[in-house]
Length: 621
Image (cartoon, rainbow, N blue to C red):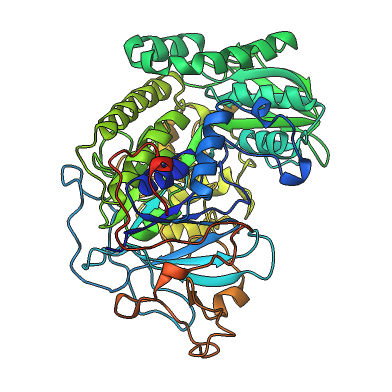
């Protein structure tokens, strides 16, 4: 029999583990990532041109990662597509009746599989946010291959698979504050990516601030790369952090393997005498043309500013991060149901009540869409070990592996332990309700469109009965190049926290800041407005940016010749792969594949493994 074909989007810890397990189960795997090398953000590698002599010194868990990377990329049934973007997912067939979700106990909310499908235009796919394909097949995957997202010469392709694993990860979340749009203000993840992936520092005198344990490895990476880290600021108070981590210590027992990593980061900060301050945050950045100084302040447990505690620190760079937001563009495009982090239906915006929104999965990592699985940070922010366990379960299940495999039980236990760790993390480092008090009327919230806080408050007050689309069009927040990926969760949370009332002034209940400026305070504008939809939903037919010329080009099914050389291709006519005429992808050669990647081997009768942890033992002859 021909092995199942599993597509894996994302080659971070979860995606690499999914590919590894799917190969062990006897499947054929196509592994897709936008980066040049696998590893994701956690295992970011130096470019090959750097010829690192001891790469294991750059990150924890290098040996295990390198072993798994080598086993996957050199496997004869794996096609590796680097520098490849998934820009859309398309159902094979529209159907007015929605499919039943994989987990009926948590029904899909407004961000779930709602039918918004229309006829396809002449160049692009139909919107896949409607009901799932009734045939049970996952959506057709639209690819841009052969170069980085900002490069040229990329080729459009389509890929049909028997199962699709989405391991797209998460990105930094940054709460707005006055001056955060200045050059020299970086997200914590961007600063670490430059330090780990390019050995480039963002500045000589740097403050690292925000919330969460991720601040520690960022500071350590900057120190190793040559920066002077002046201080690390954790916004949550010592009491909040202690209660969060210590309330159920047995849930941390399985994470003792992280102790050496924590010790290394702490030792690096101690050697360089970097202070770690709890209950303090950067509430303003100042400078002419770029950041030159930051204002830090002591915070209460709800993150409201303690008056008179402000302090000015000269810097030439600021690294800021308030946790992570899952990258939901592809799961939402596929029609996957979401939950709000507490098991309740989500609203499709990437920000639910309290802890955010994540993809709803069952015990085998299945989503509400048949044939689509999800793993890693898109299902919950739990760290790399939990992501690897989820990825292995998803890959094994997607490949049709034996559900009773002993190793699968071990992986599920590891995954559940990781989820318990995620609950501790969320309790120890929550986002306080008082952070809107940092804002002034002129504070930019949407950096793409330069929409300020005053404009948003005015819209919330005067458009109480208006739809989210009207608020978006009225303020232009979320209409810029990032398409609300950055400001969307913030705008949604501001609307929920500040409320929307007819006749409200721009900023009811504001108070004076350290320099006499007006700040939003704890006035009537702070009342809750539960149930209001978000102002900037993530649902869109095109999940990633692409050029008009790329959109107009005719796609070719994966493994076929490019449109300009294929004999049956007609210029300007899309060649979308459909189930009735699906191409034989068994002899595919990746346009974006690295030299030396082994071709697919699809010899009938390939023995299936019953161990999802080690595909290297199986016969590949």
